Length: 74
Image (cartoon, rainbow, N blue to C red):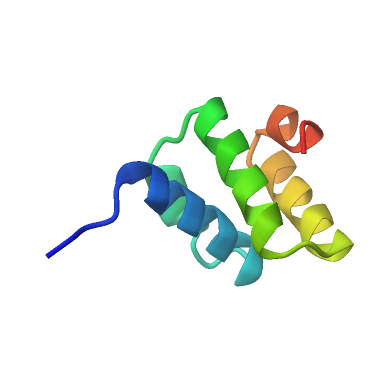
C-alpha cells in the first residue's frame, strides 16, 4: 500500500481548489503550506491546465487566501 506525501497533497488540493471552485480550500489550508510549497504547487498546476483562464483563477485564489506574492510569481 502506498500513500501520497504531504507535497503531493498540497499539489492536488491546490489544483482541486481552483478546478472545483474552492471546494478543497479548507483541506489545503489545513496542510499549512509554505510559500515555497505553494509556488511549486502553482507551477505544477499550470502544467495540468495551461489555459489563461485557469492561470487567472489560480492567481486570484492565491490572492484571496493571502498569498498574493505566490500568485504574482506565476
